[in-house]
Amino acid sequence: MKRSLLLIVALSLLLAPALPAAALDTNLRFITVDPAGSTSTVVDAINDLRQMSGRYSYDPNPFLPSHGFYLGRLGGTAVTFDPPGSSTATTGRTTAFINNEGNISGSYFDTSGVQHSYFLSHIDGTFINPLDPPIVSVPGNHAGGYGLNDFQNIVGGYYLSDTNTTHSYFLRSPYGKKLNFTTFDPPGSINSVGTNINDLGEIVGFYQSEAEGTSVDIGYYLNHLGGDFSNIVPPGSINTVPGGINNFGVIVGVFEDSSHASHGFILEHGIYTTVDFPNSSLTEIEGISDLGDICGAYIDAITGEQHGFVALRGE
Image (cartoon, rainbow, N blue to C red):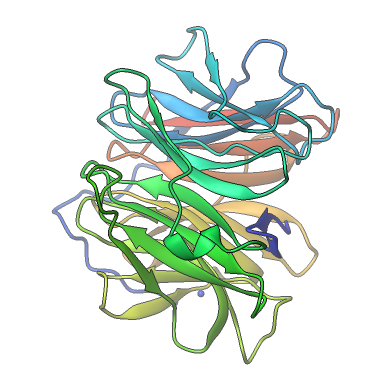
């Protein structure tokens, strides 16, 4: 499963729902999603209008998607985008997370190989980038923005070269003359990255601890900025990376089991459900909408090709 976020190789949780919600319907209809010509795809996010965003590549290496895309509806035509100054080489990864306003946040690598954050407005199609914590201006430091909510709050992580550590950050809004960044880390962590945030300010991400070292990724849930952390550990997992949380507190992500196989998971009311795309050798879930639709990527067990997917609830 090991994924590289901010140059580091990428927990039991009992959550009371933030809003009244029925149990998640795990009757999911899986649909492959690939932009035309893609050789590897990841769908990073799906919103309540079933608009999607993600990343894809023309390179056959399934772990190096390099272009962002937006898809307005299933069966539609994907729109490709690259943040200004981004590298289109296969070493450049662009992530793309869409909210219900149609705005997109994510990260990209520039032509010098430095990772940055960006924000893409749906109103006029303009980019705000690089959108990094001020300390990232120091040579050798990097930043990556990930999920955002409908208030345009963004979470991500930044890397400090002098200490060789990564820290989670919260950005209140990409608009305004002065950007308001807040650093936060789970207790006992040596590296951490925030991966998503809902409208209630609940945050998910992952970290590496002093006790376990840098070879183990542990998922975390933060009930609000400055609040309490809880670990996210699916049964049988040895590494966990949560990818999304909706406004009902349902969490999704990917975990690696003891045989080093990767699976998607859904966590609702303290109950974990493993999700695998049919006939896949690897599944990761990146996002979930308030409708319970999920999205992510899988590797076909026969062809070895990586594809994006959505799974629609109750259809």
